Image: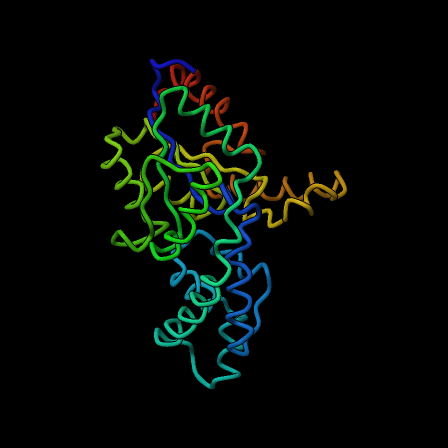
Amino acid sequence: MDNGRHIKAVILDWAGTVVDFGCFAPMHAFLKTFEQAGVPITNEEAREPMGLLKWDHIEAILRKERVKREWEFKYGETPVKEDVDRLYAGFEMTLMESLKNFTDPIPGALETVARLREAGLKIGSTTGYTKKMMDVIVPEARRKGYAPDYMVTSDEVKAGRPYPYMIFKNMTELGVYPPESIVKVGDTVSDIHEGKNAGVWTIAVIMGSSELGLTLAEAAVMDEGELMERMKRVRQTFGKAGADFIIDYIAELPEEIELLERNGLVRGLK
C-alpha cells in the first residue's frame, strides 16, 4: 500500500474483531443475567443483537417472541423499560467482574494494525461497550499491545449502533473526510449496519467473530468440514447485512484494502 491512497482511516470494532476471540465476555453476562431473572435464553438469542449498546441489546432480547412469551408467563406482564433497567444493572455488575479477562488480542490483529499504520492509515474504533466498561478494557489492551488512535463508546454519542454517530465522531476527531475514504471493520451485523448508515466502506471478519461464536481452542480442533460450513453461514449472514467485503481472518485486512483501492479506480468510490 502506498501513501497516494484513497482510504485514509480504518475504524475497528473491539470485542470479536481485535480482542476477545469469539466475543465471550458479554455472552457470559447476558446468559447469567437472564438465568438469574428466571427466563433463561439460548446462545443464539444472546448473540443475535451483538454489537448494540448493551442496554439496547437487552431490550432487543426481550422483544424476541419466545423470550417475551416466557417473561409474560413468569411475571404476568409484558416487559417494560424498568425491567430492562433492572436487567442491565445485573448485567453490568456481572460483566465488570470478568471483563479484564477477555482482552487478549485476536491472533493477527496486532500485526494487522501495525501494517495499516505503516501504510499511513489512521486507526479509529467504535464499540457496543460503555465508557465505564472500556475503562477496564483499554488499559489491559494497551498493555498487551493494542491502542487505537481514537476511541468512542456507545454512551458518549446520541445513540449507538446501528446509528452512525460513533463513526461520525471518529471522522471529526481523526480529521478524516469524506466517508468513502474510511473503512469500518467489525464482526457483527450491527457493525455492518453502522458502517452502511455512515456511508463508509464495510468489511466483516469471520474468524473470531461473535457471529461464528467459537473459542480459539474450539476453532483449532473443529473438523475442517464443519468449520468451513459454519464460516459459510456467517459469510451469508454478513452478505445479507450488506457488507461490502467479507474476510476470513483479520490478517487479510491490509490486502483487502489494497484490493478495494485498486478496484476503486474502476468502480468509482461510493
